[in-house]
Image (cartoon, rainbow, N blue to C red):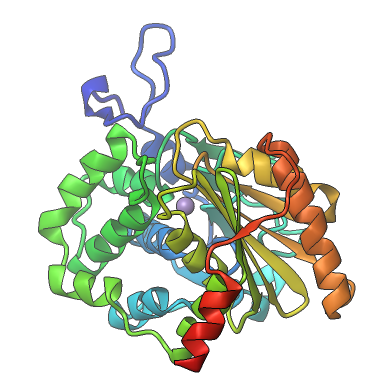
Length: 367
Ligand SMILES: [Mn+2]
């Protein structure tokens, strides 16, 4: 359907032969016209951006194409805010490992790309579509529909723009999820938001349930979160403009990113990296407080062939499988990660200065 390019809201490709290019959301929906059913997948331990993107596309497909849609969950949802989002908004998720390869129908992957090591999708299942915004690429060969915009802050903004292009009514719960999904991706400083993210947030704000949003943002957290924070503070070291926090063994993988978000606020550094051991992996998180930081690419080079990593300019994550969880094996890996990080950031290899001195820690214990 031809429409004025002014309607595109940033979602159009360049005009072809003088004719306005079709809306991306039209191409997306046309590509699914013959599908029996659609399965939506995101990355492992789905975050609010992933969850909201799946919810938005499910609503778009159900409204426009009236087809059955399955939203999946790869791994656990453990972060308090993310659990609150799922529970309070009534999101129904099917564990990915409960689907047989023949039950998938057309697969749409959001907030991730194939072969990035970030999901447990059977390798024989090739996605029909990939919608993502990560700067570190995956394998997109033979994916018929690709909408990867590395300049956009959230995949949920791309999905919301599809709903806006198609003039689909956005129910309150969905608007709340989409707004929270975008917000969580762009709330760092310097902001990683594009014009599209801001347009989408303006559109969604009046449609969302602001009380529910506040409940999600302020979800109550268990005691283990504070234990983890204490552990990290006791083992945080400053190297010039970098702070590294060793979180130790953690009960849920997202805690590493939560601690990293806290440490990057430290006024004396521009970079924060946290690492913790979850099950048989070392989980890594990196944040930058400066523009053009290339955090995703840096963490990818630091991890190298030891594991996988990727992300955005100012936020990145990764994981390294552990052959052994013995203290010496973990410490050896920590030393490798630290050495590579310092080299990547051009910081002289030196002994780190503790964020909290041993003497202070002991004094606090004695008090
Ligand atoms: Mn995202």
